[in-house]
Amino acid sequence: MKWRLLAINGATVVLFVAASTLCGMCLQTPTQRSSDALTIFDSDPNHIWNRTYTCLLVRQSTEGKEYGADTLDPLLWDNTQHLLTGDSHRRALACLDEFLRMHGERAVEDPSKRAILQRDLWAVFDWTARNDDLPEQRRELESRLAVAIHRLALTPEQIRALPDTYEAAVAAQQFASAYDPRNPGKPFLPPDLLRPDGPWVSLSAYSGEPTALQHFYFSGRSRFLVFMKLPGGRDATLAYIERLRSSAQPPLLGGFLNLALPQFPVGTHVALVRQLIVVDSTGKLVPTKLTESVQLRVYHAITPGTRYMNYINGPSSHDQDLFEFRMSRPELFAGRNGGLVAVGPSQTEFATFNTHGMDGLDPAHPSEGQNVALKRCGGCHSDSGIHSVQSRMRWMGPSPGAGARSNHSDPIAWETHVTIALKAQQPEFKLLRRLWQNMPDWLDRFPNRSGDRR
Ligand code: HEC
Image (tube, rainbow, N blue to C red; front, side):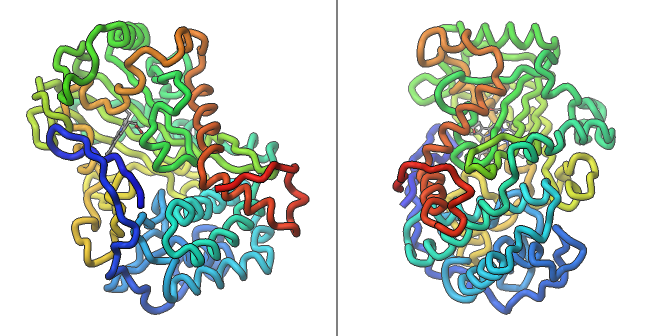
C-alpha cells in the first residue's frame, strides 16, 4: 500500500491510498515484440542494448500498439503487473540474464549512452522496489537490475566529462531564446536560465529536503531546480521573493488560498529543470548536467482568482502559456540540440507524475490513458499568479533552523546536496546498495559498506 498526496479539483488536498493489489484485469502482454524497430542505442535493432531496453521499457496495448520507446519515465505505475507476472516477467528475466551473462555493459562505450541505460534500468529498479506485493518476482528483477546498474556505472572522471546538454541546446540556437507575446505558443529556451547572476532566481527552501519535494518522491534520481523571473529582472525578482518571505501572510488560510499574499506582475516566468543523477563506479550518487526536462510557465495575465485551491476551470485557468522540453534519447545520442525536444501543443502522453497509480495501459482504467501533455499542467497550476506556484509552500516561509538560508549562497549546489542526501536514505537505494554488497563476483568494485537493510 502507498500513501499518495493528491491535489484534486476544489479546496482539498487528500491523502489517497493506492492499493497495489487491486489490478485484477491488468494487461497480459501479448505476443513477443519483434525487436526490429528500436534503434536507440545502436543502428542494429538486434543489438543487446536495444533488446534489453525494449524488453523492459517498451509496452504494448491490447490492440498491439507500442508505447515507451522514448518516454522520459517508464510506463510502470504502482498497480502495474507488467514485468511482474506472466510472459513479460519471464522475458524480462531472460533479457537481463542475457545482458549479464554476455557482459552487455561492454558492448557500448559512449558515456552518455551508458548513463542513460543505467538511468532507465534504475527507474525500473526503483519501481519494483517501491512496492511489496509479488515479493519473489520483485526480488528476481531487483537482483538482476542491481548488477546491471552498477556494471553500467561511469567513473567519476567520465561523469565530469559528460556534456552540459542545456548549454548545448542553447548553443544549437534551434529554439527561440525568449517568450514572444505575439506568438505565445512558440517554445523558447532561455539561454540565461542557469546563469547564477542572471535574471532567473533559483528558488531553494534551504531546508534539509529538496524544494521540489513532490518531484523528488516521483524520482529521486534527478535534481529538480525551480526558478522565477519577474519582468524587472534579477533585482526585481529578489525583491519580490524577499517581500513574500518577510510577509506576515501565510500561503494558505484554513485550507483555502490566502488572497492577501503579495502578487507578482504579469509577464512573470517560472521554470522547473530536471537533471540526471547517476551512480558512479564507487557506488556514489553524482549529479550530471544531462538535462532531462525543462518546464516553463509564463503569466500573460493575472486574473484575480477564488479561494479554492487547484480550481482547474477557475477564473485564472487561462492566464499562463505552458512549455516543456524533454530529453529524447536519439536526439541526445546524435548530439542534436542537447537532446532536447519541445513538446507539441497536441502531443499526448500517459501521465506518470502524481497519478493514482493505476496502470495507464490497463483497459480497465480508460481514464488513465493518454492525454494532451500540456493540458495536464492546468490540473495543478491553474490558480491565480503566485497561488499557482506549487513550490511556494516550501520556499516562502522562514527556513527551519534560524539563519540557515543566509548561510548558503548557492541554491543549485544546496538542492543537489539535499537531493542526494535524501535519496541515499530511501529504502529503494538502501536495497540497491545491499544487493551490491551481496554479490561477491563484483564486490571488488565497491568499498566496504556496513549492512543497510530495507
Ligand atoms: C500532478 C500535478 C502537476 C502537474 C500535472 C504539473 N505540475 Fe508542475 N509542479 C507540480 C508541483 C507539486 C510542483 C512543485 C514542486 C514539487 O513539489 O515537486 C510543480 C512545479 C512546477 C514548476 C516550478 C514552479 C512552481 O510552480 O513551483 C514549473 C515551472 C512547472 N511545475 C511547470 C509545469 C508544466 C509546464 C506542466 C505541464 C507540462 C506541469 N508543471 C504539470 C505539480 C504538477
